[in-house]
Length: 182
Image (cartoon, rainbow, N blue to C red):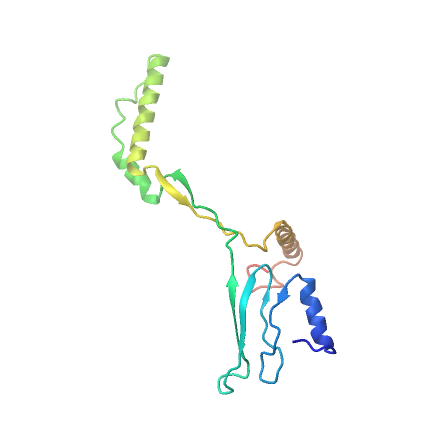
């Protein structure tokens, strides 16, 4: 509850309104009838806002609760792709499972023999790779997009990084010796 002649309260209300957010508490949240506890929201539907006085033994603030209605606008259906799992041990398994290639390592007499030898080696390598690291359907990890991270914040972040680099070039790490980054 905002008192009409409360200049600081009115200035605060103007400030949060300028950011396009909503202050959802309309009554006192403190035992001396002050509104000290706030629920500020943007783009979220709040229902059942309840302010419950507490015992002074527990707190001089009231319990503030509400229900949030959030629709997950960033939900994406799971995506899958075909891929192989290659780990450090895959190389050793590939080498151990590779059949003897000595018969194929001869000098071809003509281009047809070269084509046949290349095709045979390709088949052997493909079959061996399929045996040690078969192609499987993999779930692609979805990247949650933060609603506040847009092209504007991305360009600001890029500009900040460039300014940090320029600062470090000019001043070196002697300004902040205990940090790896600013």
